[in-house]
Image (cartoon, rainbow, N blue to C red; front, side):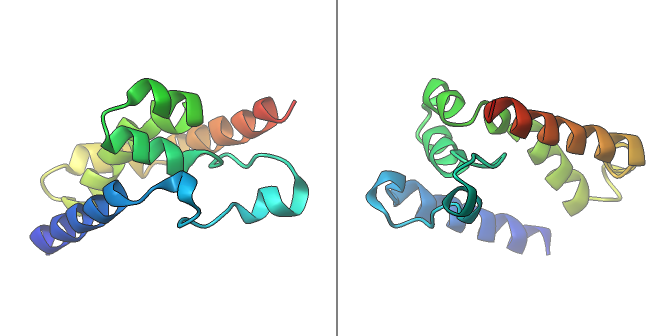
Length: 115
C-alpha cells in the first residue's frame, strides 16, 4: 500500500512538473474569484511548481506559508502513511494542540496577507 501511494505521488509530481501554472491549465482560486481576497493557499500551485523545479526563492515569493510549511506537511504525510513505524511522530501530528496551532497559523496568515 505504501509503495502504491509513493508511486501515485511520484506520478502526480511528474505530471505537475510538466505543467505550466501560468498557462491557464490549472484551476483558479474560487475564493479569490468570489471575494477578491487571497485565501491561505493562493499562490500554492505556482509555489509547488517552483519547488519541483528547484526554485525555492520563487516558491517562497508565491506563497511564503506553503514554502515554510511544506516540510512539515511532508512529515505529517509520512506519519500517516507509516503509522506503526512513525508512531511517536503520528501522535504529535494528530494531537489537538498541533492541529489547533497549525489552524491558527493558517488563519493568521490569511488575515495578514489581506491587510
